Length: 196
View (cartoon, rainbow, N blue to C red):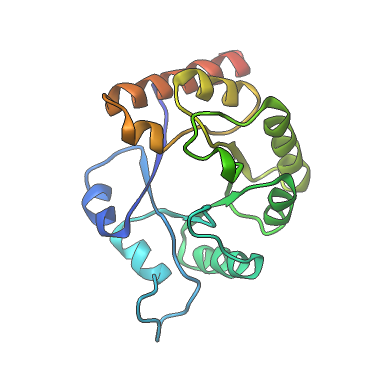
């Protein structure tokens, strides 16, 4: 499909996965902004990078951070060469995070995560518009409630840079089949949107 995939996985799996994949960008599910030194029980950016991750997800609904923590973590990720994918809930949070210049913003209303109900078109259009106005270098990634290829198709057709899901694939009877359906839908939507 000529598609790159981002896979955010537990830190304990980064090394094993990263050394066996091509065009799969392995991201840590979190990291702390601390410098090398003290930090028992926290995740050091340099350790995430050394394990083989190329990026990090920050501020997921299950691991919320303050704006100050997000800003510090983005700066530390930049220092060590990790891409940043930062989650945001409301349009207001998307605006605040866009001003911090992560690489990707995953805009997902928390109440829709894992529900099988994607965000409505108005939300998707608004977050894409807001992100592009504030910083056109940030890749907009509206998400939450994505369960099938059609959902991915609609997100990409709306102008998003990416689409994806977690729980629907994890819970699917045939996870690889669903993942392929989603990847194919992304490719089709992108080709239609760009006229390729």
